[in-house]
Length: 248
Image (cartoon, one colour):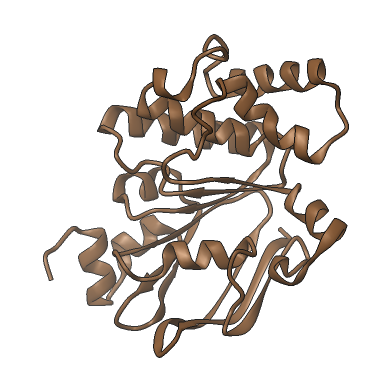
């Protein structure tokens, strides 16, 4: 399978602090790729770098053939229309209902009339199980529904890649399992590539086709591969402690 993301020798520093260095990996089209690791290891920083919110201190990351952080103008707008992002808290606008929130990227990146945008937004909400909730405000729905609505908005432009930042954070186990099932279903049905940042072990093992594990002390990748195989076969004490929930 062709890579849709190619990261080579990435480093990220803020002043004198090195977050990570020498980070290289590929993400293949259609897979669910997980970026995992403990708190403070640089998972969310790496996600922001991939989508162009940060520029790397060294190396490069190409997403669908482009370094998003280097693009400007129409070329940047076109490249960003091919990816979708769901942030940890959903990042929905509280003054807009769910249909309006999901339709917002269409308003910004397409010439569709309002009626078509609303119809497509309802369809996206239907894909995530919120077909009857389009008229509700974000404050009127549960945390799990907020996450689903955030995914629907990320899918608004039929993105090639969806980036999910800690999708299970703050959810109870049943709601989290339902969200995992949704991600796997969307992956199978739409062929969309998912890049998921998380430290939630059950979700990693449930949804991940492949993963990289970042480590704060090592300042980079300490493991890569099928998360189930890493859990069962790793000899690295840090990786083993993570997957077996052992205290360090």
